[in-house]
Image 1: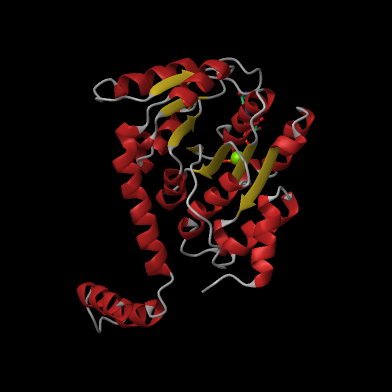
Image 2: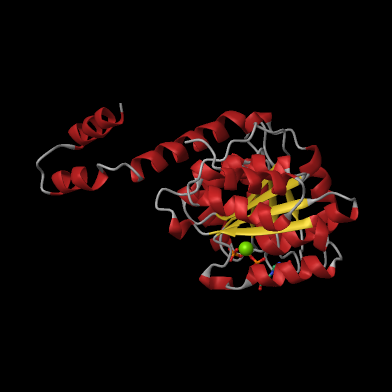
Length: 290
Ligand SMILES: Nc1nc2c(ncn2[C@@H]2O[C@H](COP(=O)(O)OP(=O)(O)OP(=O)(O)O)[C@@H](O)[C@H]2O)c(=O)[nH]1
Ligand SMILES: [Mg+2]
C-alpha cells in the first residue's frame, strides 16, 4: 500500500526535525501503516536483561555520556515499566532532562501487549526512521524475561546484556539463552553485595567460548565502571554474533506471521479437537499463505 498524502507530510516534517511528527510517524508504523523510507546506516544498541536489573538506569548514564559528546540519542523502550519497577521510564526521562540534554534525547515507549505477534515487523523501519531523522545513537531496551522479548534486541547491531548481583537474575538470563547473543555483559549494582562474585561466575562460565563477551562490573547510581564499558560498547566488534542475531530476527518475523495469520483460529480449533495433526496444520497455514 502506497503512502497517503498525510503520511508523506508527516514523514517530511519528521525528516526536517519535528519531534512531534517523528512521534506521529512512529505511531503510524506501530499501527501498521506502511512508511517507505530508504534503508539507513544506523548505530544501534540492544539493551536487554531480566526485570529490574537497572537497564533503564544504565541507559540514563549512556545518554549523559553521548549527549555530552554532542551525539543525539533515541531510546525505544519496549514495555518499559514492568510491575517490579513500574514508572522507571518517567524517572529516566527526568534524569535525562536534568542532564541538560532535552533536545538531544528522544524516548519512545512501545507496548508489546498491543501486538500479539510482537514488534518485529515494525522495529527495523522505526530504526531507519530514527536514523534518517538524525539520531546518532539508537538504543532498544527490552526486558529479557522471555525469548520473544529479548529477540527484539537482536534487531540492533550490538547487544548489551545487563545482569544483577542476584544469582536469580543470572540464572534467568542463562535459561532464556540471552547470554550467547550478548557482545558485552554488564553486572550492574556493583554497590551491592554479591555483584563481584556474580561477575566472576559469568566470566568463568564463558571462559571456554571462542569469542567471549566482555563482562563489566558497573554501578549506574554512581557511574563507576560505566565509562570503561562505554568505550567497549563503542569499539565492540560484533560480527562474531551476526549470524545468531540474524537467526533470532528470522524467528521473530516467522512468529509474527504465524500469530497474525487470518486462519490461525480456525486451524487451532481443528487442532484442539484433534481433527487435524500439527503437521497438517502447518501445511494448511503455509498453503493459504501462498
Ligand atoms: N543499588 C543499586 N540500585 C540500582 C542501580 N541501578 C539501578 N538500581 C535500582 O534498580 C531498580 C530498577 O532499575 P531500572 O533501571 O528501572 O531497571 P530496569 O532493568 O530498567 O527495569 P525494567 O525495565 O522494569 O525491567 C531501581 O529501583 C533503581 O534505582 C545500581 O547501580 N545500584
Ligand atoms: Mg527499564
